[in-house]
Amino acid sequence: MKKTSKLASLAAVTLLSASVLAACGANGSKSSSSAEQTNLAFPGEVTNDGTAIKGGEFKYALVAASASTGLLIDELVNTTVDEAFSLLVDESMFGWDGDRKLDDSGLAKVDFDLKEKKITVTLNGKDYKWSDGQPFTIDDYIFTIEKMADKGYTGVRFDDRFKNIVGMDDFVAGKADSISGIEKIDDYSVVLHVKEMTPSMMYAGGDVPAYVMPKHIFKDIPVADWEKSEYARATTKFVGLGAFKIKDVVNGESVTFVPNEYYFDGKPKIDSLKMDIVSPDTIVSEMKAGHYDYAEMPTDQLDSFKEASNFKVLGTLASVYEYLSFNLGKYDKDAGKNVMNPDAKMNDVNLRQAMGYALDTKTAGEKLYNGLYHPATSLIISFFGDLHDADLKGYSYDPDKANKLLDEAGYKDVDGDGIREDKNGKPFKISLAARKRTEANEALIQQYLAWWKEVGLNVELYTGRTMELNSFYDTIEANDANIDAYLAGWSTGYDPNPTGLWGPEAQFNYSRFVSDENTKLLKALSSKESFDEKKNLENYKKWQENAEKEAFAIPLFESEKLIAVNNRVKYFDTKYGSASKAQWNKIELTADTGAAEK
Image (cartoon, rainbow, N blue to C red; front, side, top):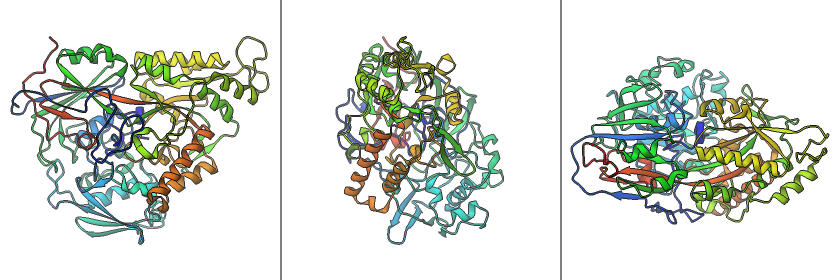
């Protein structure tokens, strides 16, 4: 999952290189080919006065409550903190337009043959180089696909987009020495023969493999050792295709980058970029002091910085949603699928629905997040435009309905203390895991506990407190038996298909929920028939309706993202096309030091 947290909402960006914001208007407005955003509280771009200086160092504040693990290759990265660093030095194969569809602006272009079930990937240039000056060819792309399928691979990115390639099953099983569906044409193009053509292939971060790594380096490193290799981590030996390369590292805290002279999209104009991890508790004072040029700001602190004189606040739709889900089983690694536990405490749909109806997310978003957090009514959030089912009401606050559902399910207050017992009349407690984030989030979680208590549910925090980000995701990924439910986030990327998070084989499906109906509807979303726009809309509507009914996850919030840009930055915009490219080759500074609050 590109977790919004271990893919959790990527602190400033997201999990896959192509997993940035999707193009559409706010509050359910339709997507726009020009990537315009409407109904947002702040503008999407800024141009500051002054003449650009030559070079300079751009100061990037990565606002996060946890440190980096140091991993940088996107084949393994699965936290938003790590990915923010990774996106500066790593690059995926494809570019995309304002409607989040693949185009010819990246390293390679894609051509589809629906009838023959073929994907042709062709490099857009013949003189591309890695950051160490070595040639980049289609062999690097083919090598990456093969190694992602290796038994020693320890990441979570080897998914259906790879398994869909003809011959992959035999290759993984050791029955073949090569993948028969990979047909190299020359040093600059390859044809992928696939089992099924899916609509997600058209989107960035979708069903066409986009990862690429330097074969000349990793061919000598066993796949099982990738995570430990200095070539995969934040070190000066890292080799990538991104706009920058690494100069200095303070482990877990900051990285100083310098321009990659071989960057395919043009060498950045600045001399260097320093990215520091900065606490949400101190970012406002740091920005006002002029210590940073860029930061994603905590929405709950808006009142403290919206009138700042030394930086501009920009707004954009966040490609993220917050949700409540449940521990319902285990992941069978050998079988490569999720397996439900029929005896799981939360394996009662009425109980799960009741927990959703007990929460007043509308009031919470207004009071704690200055109205920049909006109740999410579907697991396909509104920035996906028409694919979002605007007719769904979601789990809007309805404590009477929550009480009724619990009564019907047999959870009743037997001893009159205001807390419900289980169906057998025994004490009933729900253990909840949640990430440690901001003060507003801590207040929100305490309010959740209070709202659940109002309908008679005894919900307590696992370990008695919120958890550090990485520990949180490690624990729920392992399906710790002491956790019954969890509060998490998901960074959606451009591809609306939810299979990667809620599919029967998805490792990011930490709930481990599986049902015949959910699987059937997910398959429909990925069918060739869904290349037809009308059929695609119909299939997405059916999946969303069923997801609401089965309540394996309760959508809680969508949000607006606020970005602060110092007055010495000549120009910056948050438009999707520009944001996806990180626009580093356009960034210029008008002074040697950042402007400070007067």
